[in-house]
Amino acid sequence: MSDPRIIVALDFPNAEYALSLTAKLDPTWCRVKVGKELFTAAGPHLIEKLMGKGFEVFLDLKFHDIPGTVANACRAAVALGVWMINVHALGGRRMLSAAREAVPPDSTKLIAVTLLTSMEQCDLDELGVNGDPHDVVQRLALLTQDCGLDGVVCSPREAAELREVMGPGFCLVTPGVRPADASLDDQKRVSSPRQAIQNGADYLVIGRPITQASDPVSMLRRLNDEIDEVRNSS
Ligand SMILES: O=c1ccn([C@@H]2O[C@H](COP(=O)(O)O)[C@@H](O)[C@H]2O)c(=O)[nH]1
Image 1 (tube, rainbow, N blue to C red):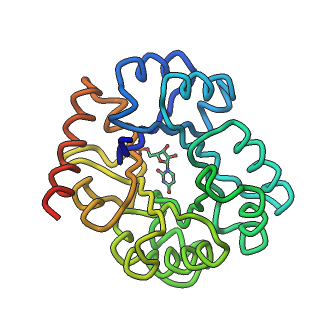
Image 2 (image 1 turned 90 degrees about the horizontal axis):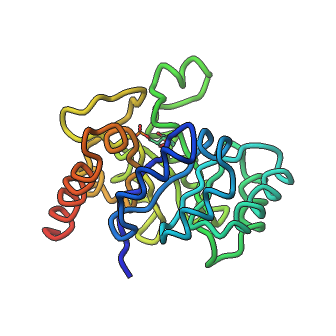
C-alpha cells in the first residue's frame, strides 16, 4: 500500500471547494486534512465522502478541554473512521492520558500539537512560557510520548532534534512547510519540504502552497518529486 507523505490541508469554507480539488487528486499522491473551518461548515458527511473516494483523512480539530470532554470528542472522531486525530499537548498529562484511553491502539492515530508553527519567541515571552520554541516543543513532545500517544505536530525545524530524542517509531507531522519562494502567510517556524524530510519528518501538512497554486496538481507532483529525491538518496 502506498504511504504518501504529503497531507493536503483542505482549508476551504465549504464542501464544494474541497470536493472540487480532491476530484483532481489521487489518494496514492496524498492524504487530506480537514480542519476547524471545513469541519464546522461541512461536518461528518464530508469526511465520509472523502473516505469513500479512498482518501485517508487527518481530522485536525486540536481538542483542548477538560479530560472527560476530550476523551468523548476523541471517541466520536474515532467512530468516523478517520486515519488520524489530534489534541493539544498543552492540555496536560491528565487530558493526554484520557485521550489515549479513549482511542484504541492500532486504530486511528492519535497525536498532539506541541507549539503552533505560527508562534515564535516573542509569543512565548508574552505568555510567560519559559524557554525557546525548541525547549518548549521538546518538553511537550516528551510529555506526549510519556502519555503513550503516537506522535506530535511540530515545526520541520524541530524535527531533527525530536527524531533523535524520541526515536524512530514516534510520528512527526510537520506543518509550516514552504517551497522555495512561496509566501510564508501566517507561518513563522518554517522549512522547505526537502529540509523537513531530511530532518526526519514522517508527514508534511501543506495547505496554501498547493490549494492556492494556479495548478495544484502539478504543485503536488513537484513537491512529491522533491520528497522522493531526498528519500531515495538516503
Ligand atoms: O502548528 C500547527 C498546527 C496545525 N497547522 C495547520 O496546518 C495547515 C497549514 O496550512 P498552510 O496553508 O500550509 O500554512 C493549516 O490547516 C493549519 O491549521 C499549522 O499550520 N500549524
